[in-house]
Amino acid sequence: MTTIPRLLFLAIALPALAIAQPRHLTGDDLKAARESAAQRLAYASSDTYAPLVPTNRELTALRPLLTTQKKYAEALERIDALLAKNPVSPDLHNVRSMALTRLGRMREASEASRTARALQNATIASITNTSGAGYDTALDAILPSDPAQFAQALNLKIVSQRNETRDGHTYLICAMKWAVNTAHDAETNDYYFNTDRIETARKKNAKPKSNRVKSSGVKVGPATVVADDDSAPKLISTTGGGGGGNGDDNNKWTSFAALKKAAGEQNPDALYELGIAHLEGSTPDTPKNITRALLYLDDAARLGHVAANFRLGKLHADGIETPQNHPKALAYYTVAARAGDPIAQHNVGAMISSGRGVPQRDYPEGLAWLIISARKNSDAAVSEKKLREFLAKRPDWIAAGEKRARELTEELAATPPPKPPAAASKPEIPKLEIAPITSPTITVPPPMPLMAPGIH
Image: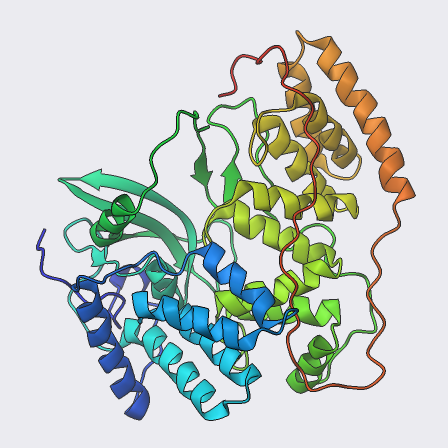
């Protein structure tokens, strides 16, 4: 495979998915995109190349500064420090635009927004013969977010992804399908990304390995398998969860401006809708922007929106749009589960019984959540039966799970569902008020004296 750097994510003809066409750029947009494409390549070849900047933790730390704490100048200083390390990150330029807007520096904010857009458009700036259909024609990844940018440019959806090493090179192989086709049997195609640059940087900055044994896991479609055998429950990845919104049928907005105004007044359903819209890039007013989507969803989740908590749990469990984080996924799922969402209840039980997001497996606690979920969900009933069969030689654990299920039922019945806050008495200029993520406390009993065989 040639080592000459190739421009990633350009407008290309993909015969396997001829129906998925990239959007076309003209005029100033095309000129800016080409300049940004050249900037990306130059940066990737420089000594200052730092593709892992910004980390998800660094982006998360900026949110309270831009919202609840209103420390806009401090946020801008941190953003500029990160941009000094990675000047081609669209996410950083987007949050920089937010900080400048809060400071009233509108001209600079518009320029930052244009820079972010140009960097995103750089993925489709011109044509290349590199198809990404195999190892020999793999696309060179410059940033970890590049596969998602590639999918967006070609109107594709990433279904699953896996890492492989071949002939001394590392690859990320993404199975994608046309985003408009929602059929489960829709044709998928693999696209190959050479991640040598990113992996070299990752190893260079890696922390020393600990002696802790890492539990295994694989991907099957959009669902995360929580163990590599058939005895552990799998996560149900239904988009949006079983709870939908917060049940307010009065929230019908006649225009995008009305929706944005409601979000500015901290209406949780409006915040959720805007978050999903930016997550999917579903309207001209809401281009795909993962950072902005997470901000809106975080705010809706903080206000008790069930579906927002579920969706954030799914995002962090799948690890496609945002880095995989099982403790954070479990925290969000737990909020939705305690609000009564049966699918979230199942996923909490599946994760706890399989050791994802917790220090160790807790079979009684996991079984308890499955028992509760099974009352409303047939998939949970199957998982409950499977786990009971696996624990057949430990009737004490089964009894403990049944007892815990009764306790949880009483706890959930005594906890009133979250209520959206009252609308602001005076309409304010629409703005995004996001609180930092607060992970619910999950109590895990002391280590079990016996590890059931078969689940690793």
